[in-house]
Amino acid sequence: MTKWFIQRADSAEDLGPFRPSELLDLVRSGEVTSETMLRKDNSPWFAAADVGGLFEAAMRPTIRYFCPQCETEVSEPPVTCPKCDRDIRRAKTRITENTIISRHEQSVAEQAGSSVKKWLHRKKLSRENKDTPKQ
Image 1 (cartoon, one colour):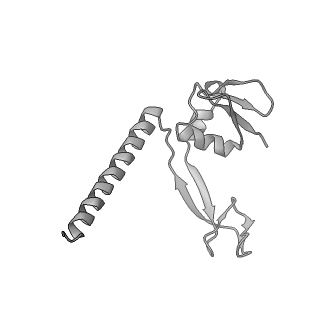
Image 2 (cartoon, one colour):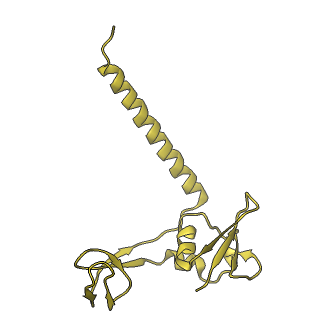
Image 3 (cartoon, one colour):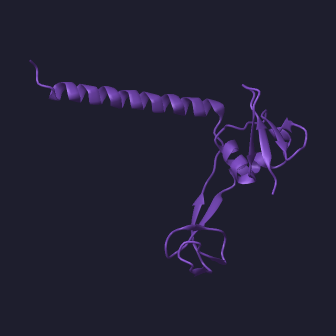
């Protein structure tokens, strides 16, 4: 199986190895952009933009299969469920539509999440202060 490595721009360390599916998840999350330097197994470093079809593959829907008996995730049927040992010819499927998050969108989402957490914290403190008897 191919192993992928990522060269972090903000540090001297290399990350990996990653399986192809993990690399696609990193592209979807915005961690890997077209400028990110990658290498495949022991090859020289190259820009992610040079990997033909990488960003297109990250946009394709993901299909996951589950045992109809116990709901454990399984590989594509026909297969035997590793948990309940059932022979599966037809599994439950879950299809996920994928998008690629840009660094800007990721930053905005993180800031929004932080704002919501701060608001909830203030709300909780306000409620606690109301519930505390005054002396």
